[in-house]
Amino acid sequence: MNSNQIDQANIKIKKAESPWKRSLKDFYKKLVKNKSALVGGYLILILIIIAIIGPYLTSIDPDHTEYSVKLQGPSGEHWFGTDHHGRDIFTRVIHGLGITMFIGFTATILGSLAGVIIGIISGYYGGKIDSVIMRLMDILLAFPGILLALALVSILEPSRANVIYAISIFAIPTFARIVRGSTLATKNLEYIDAMKALGASDLRIISKHIFPNILSPIIVQMSLFIANAVLTASGLSFLGMGEQPPSPELGALLSDGRDFMWEAGHIALFPGLVIMLIVLAFNVFGDGLRDALDPKMNKK
Image (cartoon, rainbow, N blue to C red; front, side, top):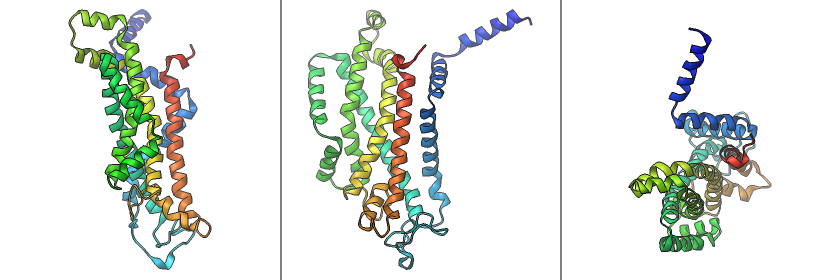
């Protein structure tokens, strides 16, 4: 086989690749150029692995109390020290990491699903439907996220499920507005009009042609909102409106340490550092995603 035949074969292979596969390759090439985004992505991956397998690698019960060693600083036996009940803080942080990230991921997924559906309906159909939906979203946006979540949890009762519902509710208007704007820009393209002229149903147009084209800002917003969800969940637990004792959720661990800041600052230090790492990782990764997925940010 000569060189021309090899080149033709390579061209055929490239043509055979699906559009999704090519777009993923292009996205990865753009993403790897952003070093901070890679650092954030690797840190997220490490945190997820620790959250999943960490609890199975610790031999100490996170709720085990031993008052003879209470308020001890970091040591070889207790890497992060012990709290006022003699519980091992390292073990509690490992278990709490999974709880906090589960709340953040679940609330973001629920909020984004509802927001995407509402935003597409509002942007695609317009008219009175759009006006009513957007006014409702404006009302929700008028409340700061943490205050809205705090009010919702207060009306219900402090629990993990209610915290997830509360965070997902205040996520809805943000996603709805982003999706509505992207839908408005996409539905006016000529090929959408051509699909309507050919008799394509609204469901087919939305699922096959509009949604794939507005996926990029949704992914970016999800990665950024997870950090916000983690902060909100931790804040609610710190205020006593989230996870209840003896849960080792990171915000609850911070709350445990606030009465011992001077005599045993390590109780609040390590959970606070882990929360900071989670938020930093998702914010850095989200910024990298935005740079990679936004055509205006790409320099040719």
